[in-house]
Length: 159
Image (cartoon, rainbow, N blue to C red; front, side, top):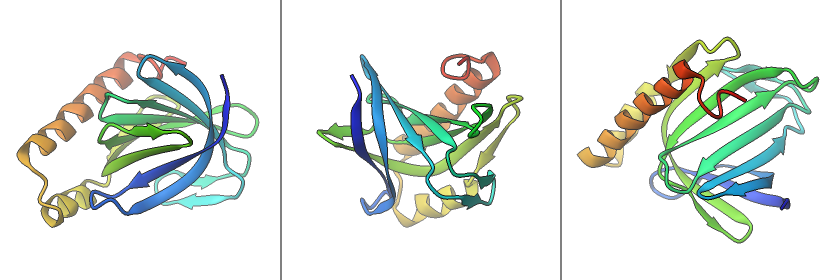
């Protein structure tokens, strides 16, 4: 059940597209959607370093969860790292997956050490967009859920 060239849009809280890319939907099971993407160009990321062309990204989205998880592999297939986004549950509409990125992320290295990223950006946007307390609670709750999954090496950290 592969669907090619699905557009994935990471949006800011105000709805504008922050990032957009193409990936193939390779699995759908209950609320879980798994995509496979390939980096065509080199990317220099302040926390991830250089991501080389042909790096693959397995992307795990749940239609009922407040996070997604990317699993990056080097061009030779070796596990590079995981990258977790805290976001509102995504919506899938035909050939487009959209989600509201809530700025705060967790970077997980292949030794399962991790670091919370973009806390300052999250705080700035929480003020700018007047995040409600219930939304802030969901962010905090899902950071804790992800940290427990990382530390226990539960799916998809077990793959």
